Length: 260
Image 1 (cartoon, one colour):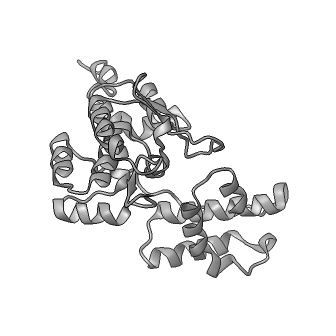
Image 2 (cartoon, helix red, strand yellow):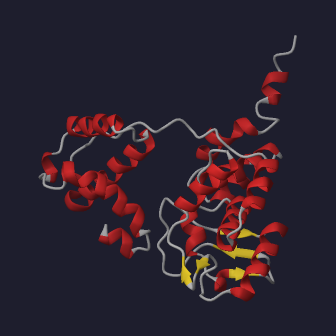
Image 3 (tube, helix red, strand yellow):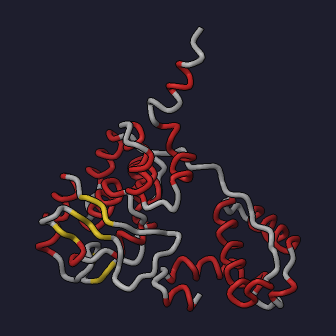
């Protein structure tokens, strides 16, 4: 954890996963951890109603720890299956209604940026004003000194909605961070988004905004390669697996070929 955090990874993310892993694996000799130990961990976490993908990330962190300690001699552990791809997204009408419901400026700005840029929550919360370029119309989500990880961050153009929200917020800024409250950077918006979801009567989380952004692009026939670059995915295949089905022309040529 210390090694990853030193590379710029978010401490809260790694600490939450280690909090889950530590009671089971913390006192174990790493080289003796077996695949069955991991399956047993999976079954116990499922009993506590944790999602497959959450447990998968737990075990991937355990694997990273073991490889960090043992290198090529690390045990070959079992990794949980991923959850089914998210299929919940917001219509533009729902998104507009949700934004209109928000009466807290920093949460409204967060939601607008999340929908407009598709950036992860951590990237938006880390964003500083020095990386918002109004002249070129660009938002740089890459903090200086942060080593690129699988949770990649990139530079995206700001649309008109994002530009207006940022221009409105900048004169009132009390810190260098774009998302701030009471003169301090904001560490998490999860509880605020949960309350907002309840008020709106629509289930959503911070990640729903990222997923929604990508779905909107796919529905508008934006090429998968551009969507992949916009979201900073590690591979085009990942983008296609999740978002190609939302494109109105997805496999249309193949379907047309079967006419008779």
